[in-house]
Amino acid sequence: MTSTRAPEATTPAITLVPLDVDDAELLYSWRSDPVAAHELGHWPRPLSAVRERIEQDIEDSDHDGFLVVLPDGTPVGSAVLADQDMVDGLACVRFLVAPEQRGHGYGAAALDALVDLAFGELPLHRLEAIPHTTNAPGLATLARAGFVQEGVRRSACFHRGRRHDIAMLALLRPDWEARDRPRSWER
Image: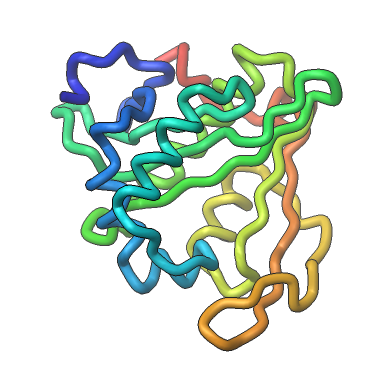
């Protein structure tokens, strides 16, 4: 029932609504997709574990998870503002687009809305992202949103029998403020 939830951020393309335990099956199916599992660097967890994690995250004040929905209420992905440190002004962003919805710009719209929420509503100063270096669509989306690659954590992730490098990207509040694009609350 995503249409009955209060939106947190909206763009013309998508709306972010708070994640609910009832979304566990949907997230489970998206995370079970082989491409997503590889790009996220994990193996699919049992549905019960996904449900438990959502419950924990809802209770955690340092973690905000959202379902990304179209104007008609169709869910197309998820976006997360995790590991929020209000003292130092830091948080980590993550986003996932449903396999059948990739290539339509929903990840970029979700990331813009999430960044606007982080810098427009919260006292954050730095957002970080840590995708695999082989995640070309994710890296391109982050770059379009203004994230700058600061380095690579070599061989930092072990997944499916192989070591993978992790890119370290960040967006600072002054860089976001300098970007010439409408904010999600201006649309």
